[in-house]
Amino acid sequence: MSAQVRVRFAPSPTGFLHVGGVRTALFNWLYARHHGGQFFLRIEDTDRQRSRAEFTEDILETLRWLHLDYEQEPWYQSQRLSRYCHQVEELIDRGHAYRCVCSESDVDQMRAEASEEGKRPQYDRRCRNLNLPDRGTYVVRAKIPLEGEVVFSDLIRGSICVENSQVDDFVLLRSDGFPTYNLSAVVDDAESRITHVLRGDDHINNTPKQLHLYHFLGFQPPQFGHLPMILGADKKKLSKRHGVVSASLYRKEGYLPEALLNFLVRIGWSHGDQEIFSLAQMVEFFSLESIQKSSGVFNPKKLLAINGSHLRALSPEVLSDCLFQEGFVSEYEEYLRTSIGKHLLVWLQPKAKLLKDFSEHLGFLKQKEGRRGMESLECFQKPLVWKSVVVSLNSWMKSCSLRVAASTQERLGWDAIWGQVPSLGDLGVTHEEVYEDFRGLAFSGGIEIKDLVQPLRFLLTSQMQGPSIFELVTFLPWDWIERRCSILK
Image 1 (cartoon, one colour):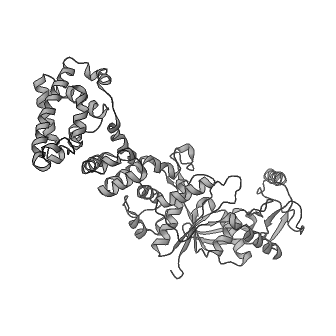
Image 2 (image 1 turned 90 degrees about the horizontal axis):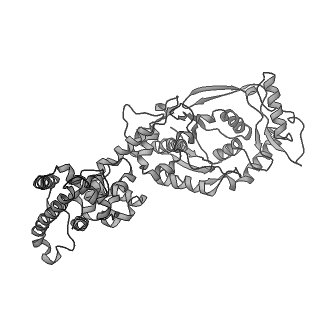
Image 3 (image 1 turned 30 degrees about the vertical axis):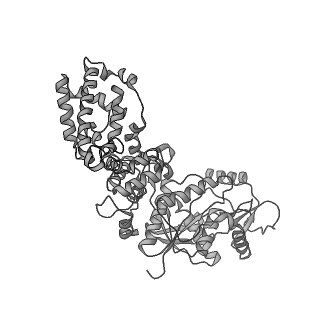
């Protein structure tokens, strides 16, 4: 490739960044990075009614979160209005544009009448040759040749030919002095020397219009490639009716940035049968030749599975950083930074598919239910269960206290035993040993082990279901177990 690749992502801040927009940004970023090129960001904020600062911030923050870095400060179209107006005047002077005083209702009527006559519904060009003066209220329209055609080679779809008769004399400048998309996009892409425009295939109809503008203004056009759409399960364009479509909401749910990118890159692109990719692998393998022409379907279950795969592959250090940075376990951070807490995170890691799962699994750490709340539960209503739980747990506590004391006496000294006490796991106690302890206690109390386990689970976690209680016991700080079990005394 002779010239350096220069691509851009140009979202409009009229809503929170859509996952479809994220995929467009990703494909442009990957193309640039694969070819050692440059990736730019442009904020197309000329829609005064719908553009909002919070949406712009969402775009910037989401790209930061996804690590899709760009080369320089973003261009804001709202800061370049004079440049667009200058180019419009140039087009008028060269005879490639004209002022039009027809109202929107006038144009709507023209289109309706054309449809009734079986013609293409478009503006009838009645102001085209009037050479109207620069006064009053008007829009500026492009003066498209009435004959001929536009032919371009799409990087994904191949050769495309459009008759000029199918291209309307579209508006370049609105009556409020703000440019339309086609004008501002062409001026910006040309002046920032964009070499490749990769965007959704809903923009295919804009390409012939923009190629005319490149020709009118004397600019070298970039190469165009139109990406297949992302569809919902009903095979219709992905929208809010299909559920969550905002990238920032997936972040709040606890998805990893690399997992979301991995999922999105596979909608419309492939590399053999490989499903799981790191960002570095995406850069290495990415090519436009591997992008399919047909639309792909957004599958939330597949996204969840990919996220689980990426989550399980994280090192303990990276996992902790992700949880702390995203704030999912901030209330437990001090504990989770200890060696005991890190062990607990690693143990929970294979059981989690989202970062927020850790918060749910660790919820018991803030529970403070007392004995009265437990006595009302069904698992405590069976004959002898409550008495057996009290006797068994007190007996087990006494046994474990001796075990803790014996294991820590030499290392910490007797006076420190009930200060900073480690977990049973740190003392070499396994979950198999804990299970045998409770099996023996249940047998001596004349009850089944399940009747002992359920009360124990609720006592320690305030939950009736969850991961193995015998494993959990080995990871909890000993003073935590002692404090919770003291409720039964």
